[in-house]
Structures are given as structure tokens and as C-alpha cells.
Image 1: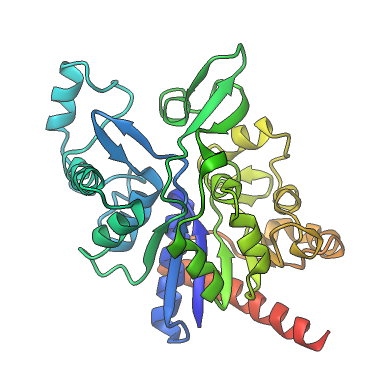
Image 2: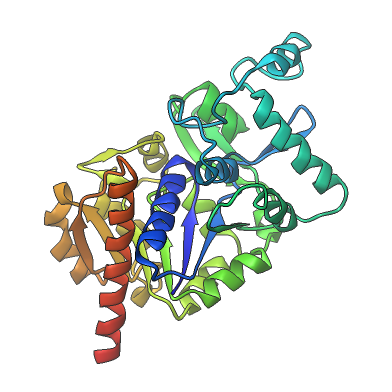
Length: 328
């Protein structure tokens, strides 16, 4: 079986790790591809930073700082202190020394003419990740946020400096109208037996992937079932201030509301199926009636066992959907 995951951020990284753990335990998966959000990316101090990609890279490599939830474990910040002393970087965004090494290597390869997809492949060879990471696009589509009062700032400033506390009016992706999906990302979607939408932020992690011209069409044409996993449990975001992002686009912080935001693929949307938490089981029948067959399972990814079980549940739901489609 070939599995492709759409992901970004900490929740996406943990879910991808769970899919890999299930693959290692079951032996049922021959390949895992992850299409990674690039909307969080930005330039800082002359280097190109890929926050979502690096969360996935470090988590899958076993190098992530699990206490902070981001960055490298065993990190130091001597260079960051110097950069801030020179006024090159703001005090609210700190680059760890080990992390900076990744950014410098990436930027060197980009400036030498390699595409982001080529760079991601090079970065992925250092550790045995067990998956292949693909930027959703090779074009730059940095996210900016327009807040109340009309001020516009890079997503990283809104997210990291202000902790999403400034009410957002809208999110804009610079240059996205001229962007296109990365060829490797499209190939991974087209070759998949199952496409999984990770429990990542639906607005700023999955949203930019879907907003790339041609990406939704590729997912609608995909022969594989598309199954999403809710990142909302019991009316609360598990991580990442998703409630502030959902409010900006007029979507309730609710598992069923997010599913309807993605929409049923049978009705022009994205999803063939959806996983909700046991706390949200009551929403299942109505979602199924709306064309998004839903099942309630434990969604908390507390360790390798619970993460692998969630991946198994998502794949089982996809298998059921596939069987139902054949019988129809």
C-alpha cells in the first residue's frame, strides 16, 4: 500500500510519525509520502526557513525537542543572541544553532539553483525518516495576515510574536495565483492507495496546500479515498491556536464544522471520510448524511502506540470506504 499524507505543523508531524510506526508494525505499507505545507515559510537573516517541513524532518528523525514542541533537541542559541545584538533578527523569533545549520544548508542549495523539492530530498537523506517529504509547491507562497485595523504582517509575526491574539480578518498567500503544485507532490497524490489529511491546522497548514492552483483538482481526480482526521476534540483545538484561525474564516471550532469546511468529495469538496474523537461521536450521522462518512475513534496521540493506532483507524476507514464504493 502507498499512503500520501497532507500535513503541516506539530500535529501533522506527530501524525506522520504515527503512520510510519503503523507501517513498521504492520508491514502493510510499502511507501509513505508527505505533502508538506509551505505557507509558513519565510526569509529571515538571509536564510530560508521552512517551519512545517522542519517540524516533520526533526520529528521523524527523532531530533525534535519534544518539550518545546519545535526545533532540535540539545539546542543552543549563541548565534541567535549575536544576530539579535546586531539587530538582524527580532527578539520574538529565535534560531537555534543546530536549526540554523539546516537553514544555511537549505539556503546554499537554493541559491545554487536547486528547487525546494530537490532540497527537501537532500535534507531527507541525512536520517532514516521512513517517509519522503515533498513541499506542496516549489514556488514561494508566504502567508501574510491582515488584522483588525488593516495592518498586514507575515504569518510568523502574527503567530510567534502575537500568539494569534490580534484578530485576523483574512490570510493572504503572496504569489499563490501564479504558483503550481510541485511535480513530486502531484505524483505522490496520483500514485497513492490512500490519501490522509493530517490533524493539522485546517486554515494555515492544510489551507495553503489546497489553495495552490491545481491541487484541489488533483485531489478530486485521485483514485484513492481521501480521509481526514480532526484536529478539534470536544470543541477545542488540540494545538496551534486553530480557533483563532478558524474564527477569521467564519468556521466554528468544531470537528463537524471543519469537515464541512473541507467538504465532501462527492459534492465538489475534498473528503471521502472523516475521523472524529469519541467525544464528538454524536456528529457522525449528520456528517454521513452530508456525504462525509465519519467514525469516532481515540484521537489523542500521546505516544507511539496511540499514534500508530490512530493511523491504523484512518487506514481502516479508507478501506471500508473503498469496499463500499466497489459494491455501489
